[in-house]
Image 1 (cartoon, one colour):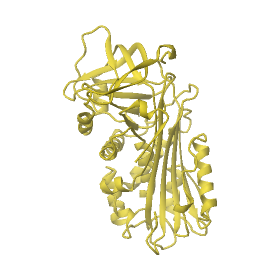
Image 2 (cartoon, rainbow, N blue to C red; image 1 turned 180 degrees about the vertical axis):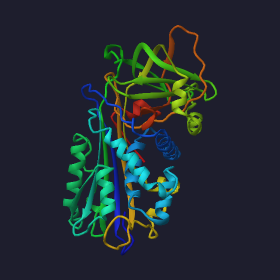
Image 3 (tube, rainbow, N blue to C red; image 1 turned 60 degrees about the horizontal axis):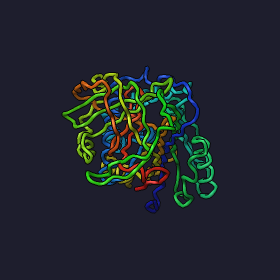
Image 4 (cartoon, rainbow, N blue to C red; image 1 turned 135 degrees about the vertical axis):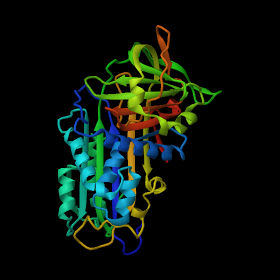
Length: 413
């Protein structure tokens, strides 16, 4: 995190947190957002997820929506080849799409204004005595709904406290001390922060009285006992033999949010499923799923996950912003060279009888074959992928490899 001498730097912080509280009405967010933009952000989400899981075999949970929002916000201040790299890697095309991307994010965030279930916030912390270029400020305020605050990063302890207090407020005091004072110094010029908070309850809640220990297969031959929830209701369900999986959608009460579970046919089939993620088309998959009575077994789980995304983003083609060749000349009035020092992401998810907490979703629609059984079994008793989506837009994606280790535990790269 130590910058190259003489190069002021930016620190992008990305926070995602979810907590289950009381039921609340969710208002659709995507009516003004074109399908092409949603598809592009989903494509980036899947590539991001695949890159992260390629180096981590444990439980993983990320919010691609939060990450892409933060990176897109930063891209508005990039220029030259740095901007081209960012827009290409995030699947937007070229930097000539800057205004169109900003407009799309403006539409997404505008639709969240009256949403009681999902809240997102952006914030700019700017070094005192420095000023943001007017065009970047206009985009930040009008499209990314970002507040701005001047701060003295030289007083790094107080600066970290200020930023962390904002994070705690936006995440209901669930994420504390996110920024360490030692990542801030006299070379810091700006910190961009994005925070997401979601709360939701199942449309069909599980009865806690029937939750009981059952085997969860962590490999083809080894299992652990975990708290397994159980219910028998009508859910959208589909079997996709060509992908070697079954899919089931759980909806949230009074909401356009849903969780899609992708369950491999085999106990050790998760790796094959993840290899096929790029070919999965969620909107198409959902059209091939039908409501039927399902006997559902789903483990309770809780995961915390955090990661410095620098290595991941470099591998995805966004390396230039971390180098001395970075160009963020569209950001500040002062003619100083700027680069990114690191991008930090933190996520939390909990699934229990009442509901689930999340923000991101993936999908793929493949040919489905309907079951001929009157009651279809869906036993999530082996590693699986779960996706939380809003009208097919990925908000959260994760993999559960061992609920026993994840419940109340911290998973970190």
